[in-house]
Image: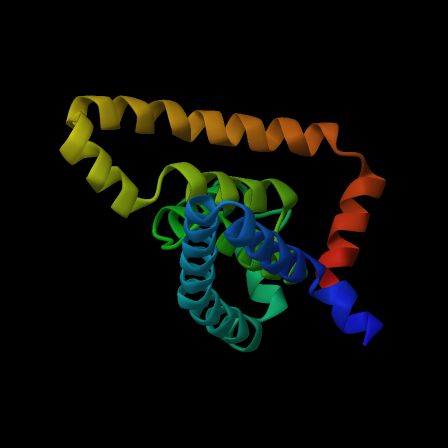
Length: 177
């Protein structure tokens, strides 16, 4: 029972807060419940397909293949694959982290995983199309051209600032997923 309470403490807290809000301020409580249900629905739509894809990645892609394509010696190919995977991704950013964990588990280079996360958050193709239709192609192209080297620069800077021990800890945690 204690384990269940610990595991679901955030969900239980949200339910309690929503209940208190509905009693104290029905308008705010109603909005809060609506937002909570919308967020839960969104997560239930995106999380199952992500976990199916992770299972397929785990079974179909050998560790040696992932290390060759995106590992320490992958060079420009690894960076390109990370950008492409992140750019063609669909769904909110929180869905990228289980995928990033699986990539680390399979031996991807730390900076390539950071590039993947950066691309997922800023260069998704559907987002670029929407942005171009509302802000114009010139703005979208300019932002895209600035984002690509920016993402790579940030990824390499973070990798250089991260100590060997910190990276080892990150890879160990990924292996335990």
